[in-house]
Structures are given as structure tokens and as C-alpha cells.
Length: 419
Image 1 (tube, rainbow, N blue to C red):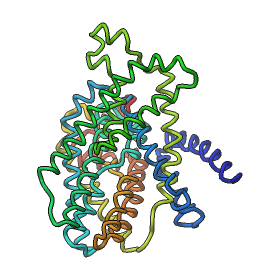
Image 2: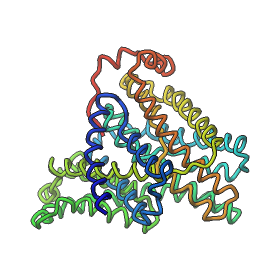
Image 3: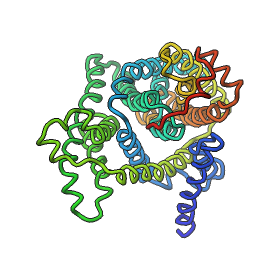
Image 4: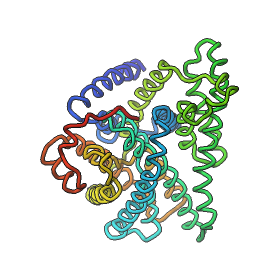
């Protein structure tokens, strides 16, 4: 027990060091943390996900809720409104094309039949909120492209979850109601956002009274957990609700609620200290999340490494082409556009969904799981490598040619603080 407690303390200090090094060297702290998990788990065999029991998945979910909520408090509503059109194009386009690429390669090289291959494609079609959001903040992207990436990761999480369960229904029962599927997606998005919005307004009313009690700095985070749990219980997206809650709490004036005297008089907003506390919570949870993610990855075959690498190389090339046609405006600098193409990592959501095919008895379920774990590792590693090498002038020229953006914009503009 003493060794475990000592390790936890050292890990926090080490994470602060990694964050500082990220600013100096461009080496993402998330990659190093995941590498530590890999060494502790799959490589040395000292720790396995089973050692955590249910606590591991619970901590991962808590990390996701806090990261999404804190990200919501950092989003400017006006910027989000301008980014929605681009977000929908990036999110849906990337989701569909990624699913197609992965399905095609899975059929050819993994010899999966169509539906299991498509299931793998949908599992890997999204981007990981828990990976993307901290990196967007660390990279100091401009507000609009940063907001696009945050919203994309939240939206594709919903699409992945709904799509996976729909395909499992097709595979196990032989059919699926297209109307119910589309309705489920819209319900998961709209109702979850509404619950987060209404929950945010309600919390702003009681926040002042809650602060009269001692030791209540964490009460807002506890409330975010409640909103997430209620949404998931009702069958909607808790992730979208958490993001919506954070956006509402920090943007109630921009929403026009301050114009109503009764509302404006009774609403209490978050303080700078509140926001700093949420940021610290994200930092701590992110540390343990990525170590746990590294511990959870499975290795089974060298062939999977080659196939998974091919999948991610094609996906990243696809994002370059897709982003080139969407980020045409001069307001998107070469740096922000290039980073958008790089931030396509897969995370714990994909790893969790990958365990379902085996539970449902899908043929090739174990192969789907192991391929997903390998893609998670490779996608995060590839994202990190691309970010590390981007400052090189030859790399910038490559992205400049591919994205049709001038290199010098990166040098003249200082990135704005972001999500």
C-alpha cells in the first residue's frame, strides 16, 4: 500500500514536469503517461485492468465528465455559433470516411465479413474527447478551430455509441429500424443538450445559496455528475449534457438571460477560483486516465500492428484532404488547420465499445477488440509524433502545400488562448 500511495504522489509531480516539457519540446504529456501505463501493464505485467475492478472504468468516466464540463466552461458561445457549420462538416465527414476506410481494410486484411468490419469501422470513427480537449488547451489554438475540435469529439462519441448498438442489433436480430436509429441520434443530441441547458440555469439559481455552506467548491462538479447520470439513465448522451452544462453556466449572459431583471438578480456566476479548480481537477484526472488507458491496451499479433498503422495513416491523410476543402477561410491559420488534421486520436470510448462484440457473440469479436486497442495506441502516438515534428520547416511546407495555406501566417500570428 505504501508503494501505491508513493507512486500516486510521484505521478502528480511527474505530470507537472511533463506539462512544462510539452511547452518546451512539443512532446505531449498524454503520450508519456500512456507509455508509463504500457510499461506497467502489457510490457512488465505488474498491473492489469482487472486489478482496478469496476473502479477503473468509473475513474475513466469521471475523467470524461470533468474534462467535457470544464471544456464547456471555456467555450465562448459566439465562437461556438460560428463554428457549428464547420463542426458538422468535419464531424460527419470524418466519421463517415473513417468508418469506410477502416471497414475496407478490415475486410481485405483482417478477413472480417461486412457487418463485423463495419462494426469495427464505426467503433473507430470518432475522436477521443479525453485526448483531444487537453491537447487543444495545451497547444493554445485559436478559439474557433479549438471549439470545432472539442465539439467534434463530443458529437462523434454519440455517433459511435448509437452506431455500434444499431449494428449489434442488426447482427444479433437481423434488422434495425432506420427511423428509430435516426430518431435516437437526434434524441441523444437534442434532449441531452436541453437537459444540460436547463440544469445549468437551475444550478446558477442555487449556486449562491450553496456557497453559504462550508466546503462546497466541488459541488458544481458533483452536480455535473448528477446531470451526466440522469442523462445516461434516460438513454441520452451524458457527454453532450456535461458539455452543454458547462457552456450554459459560463455563457448565461451571452444567451440573453441577463436581460431579464428577475433572472439576472438571482443568478450567481462562476468565479475565477472555480474555473481554476476545475482546471486542476482536469489535470489530476487526465494523469490517471492516460496511465489507465496504457494499462488497458492489449497486444496480440504483429499483423495487427501493420494493419492498424495502415488504417491510421489513411485516416490522417483523409483528414488533410477533408480539412483542406472545409478550412478555406483565411481566419484559419496553417498551424490551426494542420493541428486539426492531426487531432484524430482514438481513446477509452473506442476501447470500451470494442468489448461489446465479444459480449454479443459477434464472429471476430476478439479480433475487433485487439485491433481497436492497437489503433488507440497508434493513433495517439501518431498524433503526438506529428505535433512534435510540426515546427520543422520542411513539415510546415508539406502541410502548406497540402492545405493550400501560406507558411508565414504561422510565424506572424500568436495563437490565442483557447479551450
